[in-house]
Each structure stands twice: as structure tokens, then as C-alpha cells.
Image 1: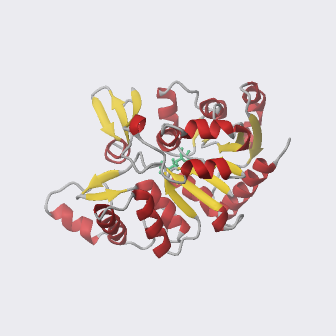
Image 2 (image 1 turned 180 degrees about the vertical axis):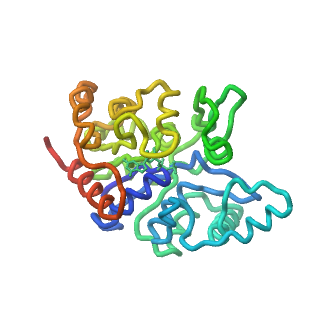
Length: 310
Ligand code: GDP
């Protein structure tokens, strides 16, 4: 069994490779819900959806979110009423949010709803939300706090970042199965996701950090940073705002309490010594998932690093 802590697009690219390397039944993905948002009265879980669509073979891989071949008729109609359309929702994607919201209102938990949606789509891996409780990542800027989607999508991550908050996390409990999966897995992978806004919220749930720390030598983080930049998105900007170097060493430091192993890009091999000084074992591989073959190679390497005794 392998457990994977996962955000959205970076994690989905990695999962695409992983599905070719290990049987789906042996995978438990623990997804970030700090990005969840309510729009049009609907509960939207962008990272869970991205993962679910990837697991079901439906993901629009060019965009990294949404469903292949989806249309935007409903969103266009919403725009004609003068309502904001900055958060794009495809028509088929909307069906997911309608059904999720109905089932939640009928009293099912997010864990149950996610399992039911996955089952109907024929997904064989297990997908768990990090928690059933509301936790919402907010980005504090000089002119006030923004919910994650407002910062990321509406403001295109331009505002200066002062601090990050995982609102509600101190009262949240890990979703059923999360701690068990971490405790029972042969190995735990931290996907190449944004450390601050995708993995940070998962680590902020009481009990998760402790459960990982106990298995630290079985936890491998895959760096989303190559050289001194994120492969994409605001991970670098957010790490800097939280006081971490934007480098493989910064990632290793960020995860040092929970991950005893890290996979860094082969071009960053010179960082190994510094990383090992913070008591994290560093492995190298090409980390850019430019196509399916590259994602498979990376997944194979990550699984091998979990097993490695040296
Ligand atoms: P989000 O919730 O959509 O932001 O998705 P994630 O947090 O899962 O993914 C975003 C992160 O993935 C960014 O920090 C990127 O640097 C990282 N990423 C994207 N593509 C790649 C890749 O090909 N290789 C690696 N190593 N990281 C990647």
C-alpha cells in the first residue's frame, strides 16, 4: 500500500505516472481541501476533482483541471446576467458539484460523497479528503486576506503575500481513514505539489504531522522546485513569504519533520550534501513531467526511493 499526500495539478501529473507503476487498488490519495470554495451554492473541491478526474481518465491534462472536451455553456449564460465568471466551471464539471452538494445536504460526509462519486466513475484507487471539516486556506496580503481561489484565480497570484492561514484547521479532524492509511502504508509519498497551499493544509490537521513523523523514514517528498524556481505557479513566492528558500533545500527543510527522504532534480545534485545535513536523505532523478513517459519514469523512481535502504 502507498499513501500519497496530494494537491491538484502537480499531483495529478504525478498520479498519472503512478497508475502505470502500481495497481490502483494499492493507492490511497489524501487530497487537499483547503482550496474548497462555495460558488452558486455548490460545494467545489478543486483538488479532489482534479485527482478524481485523473483517476477516472477524464482529466483535461492540457489545462490540468476540469474534464476533457467539456463545454462552458452554463458559465457563458451566467456571464450574461452580469455575474462574475472568473472561476471557470465546465458543464460536465458542474454535474459533479451539483451531485456532491445534493449528497452533502442529504447528510453524507465529504469522505462518503467522494467515495460515491469515485465509485460511479469506476475509480479503483482510494481518494480521501484530508478532513470532513471546513478548513480554508487564506492568503494575507497588505490589503487584507483573500480566500485561496480569489488569490490564485481571480488575482492571478499577483498580490504581495504577508502570511498564510489555514482557517479552521485547529478544530478539524483527519477524515476517517487518513491516519490509518498513513500508519499502514508501506510508504508515503508527498506529491510534487505546492508545499504551502496544497500540502501545508493537510499537515495542519491535528494528528497528521505526528502520524507522518512516526513514519518519517518511510516518507518521500518529491520536490516541486527545480533549481530556484517552482516548475509552475506560486509555490516559490509562497515559500519565500513563509521564510523558506526557494530551492530543493528549502523544500527539504519545509518537510524535514515529516519526510526523511526527498527526490530532487538531477540538475540539483549539488544540493544533496546540504540536504543531508538537515537529516533528509536526497535522491536525484529528472523531475520534469513533460509527457506521460516522463511521469511514469518519475513515479517508478519515487517508488524505488521508498524501498531503497541506502
Ligand atoms: P494546485 O493545487 O493545482 O496548485 O496543484 P499542486 O499543488 O498539486 O501542483 C502545483 C505544483 O506542482 C507547483 O508547485 C509546481 O511547481 C509543481 N509541478 C508542476 N509540474 C511539475 C513537474 O512536471 N515536475 C515537478 N517536480 N513539479 C511540478
